[in-house]
Image (cartoon, rainbow, N blue to C red; front, side):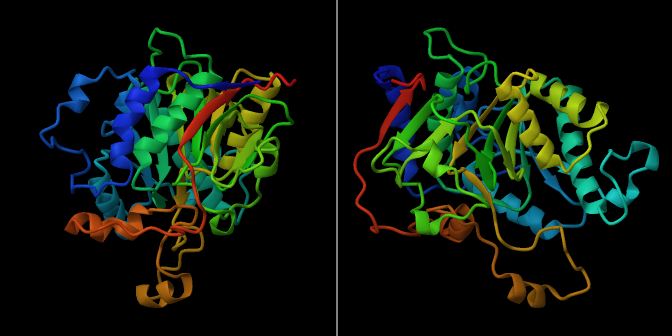
Length: 373
């Protein structure tokens, strides 16, 4: 049964966010984001849903994984985080060839050093949450892109996460995203939906959702996610996935970091990192292990289709490589921050894609408990 959202407090919060969604953004700063004269970061409780508008998006920190030497990617990150008022910490990428044999994961073999290095870098990010005693951290790969309204999108995502985790009572949860989650997965290239019926939070008539022709993913779970909706092309769905692939951006709670290190390192994991992520979510949903995931489709953070570190050829001149790969930009985003970074720095009007292609009504949100008829 569908339950309309009648929580006035939630909509009061979102009314603040919607002002921001399509406004011209003012240049801010990064790494860390210094004061802009606003007391928002200091005035908000870290568990308030409005804390998502702080410089770490409501998490304890944001970790960007960046290979040493890829200063081109780091400069791009400095720009897009500065105009988004996001602060971050760099977690160095790892060369798989430098991992001692005794520390190899189970899947290591000659020729898979890149996958091994990626696995180790993500394990280091999870370990840093524990080393620094953080409540949570958002872990992001360094070639990502997001919509200029990311903070509004994450606020809507948090409302969905709170409903899925039964955190919509009057008492504030410890996290802006609700309590009881181990991993949030807002950045991926595909997600697996469970068999219906299942609980879902709908964000309908979302102007930041790309049309079907403008989406890219390895596979599309939309038919299952919106099987009972007549018009779903502008609907974003928050739910608990049965799996997925690609680790563009995900968040771990403190206990989530503990569990990830246990299952994907201590227990001699045998597979690429994102396959391990999917397995944790799938097994957690089935009740085989204690692991809680929340995802969103379409995703909010995507990779810019430029040059990744996999297949990177440093012997070729940069211009020659860019002609082959194309200018880095992400699909699935209406108002890409990478595409608009110069406009945002210069205070010019934002440029979007697919505007006016489909008539979109007023934004609506509701929760379906997934109990069937």
